[in-house]
Image (cartoon, rainbow, N blue to C red; front, side, top):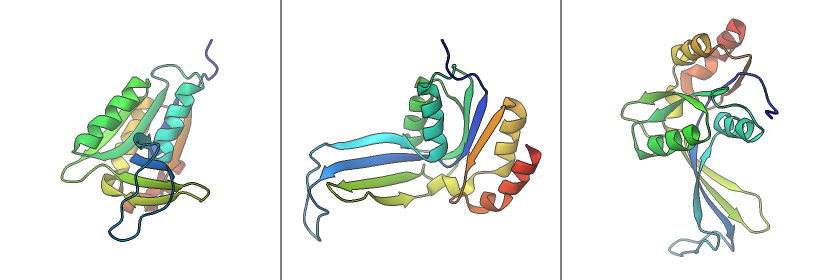
Length: 163
């Protein structure tokens, strides 16, 4: 039985996260610290995370869409594979000559997380791309996360007015 029954479009930034947890410390200059839990590669960014979470809550395949920008690199391929395996409909704008956004997350035991982000292709998300996806996908719910989307951040209100 499906728990969630609405068509949702999530839009905004997507990141590929490199996560090193359970670190004993942050290394000083010239030092090395080994990651006892390994270094994990995960999909990230609020819209991608919300999309995955909705699928885990029981949304049907094809009911959750994601509109964002990616680079023309291997991390784009990773993101597409992960999202499509989860059953998310991906509407990715590929930005030529840019890399997919990456975040390095360092978690020292007993301390808050540290983030190092390269916004990459997110800075070039096109307003017309997201508007076109809205018109094509026709969601019942639209979620957008902004803040690192370059000029797009100044047009979010136009999308909300359209909705």
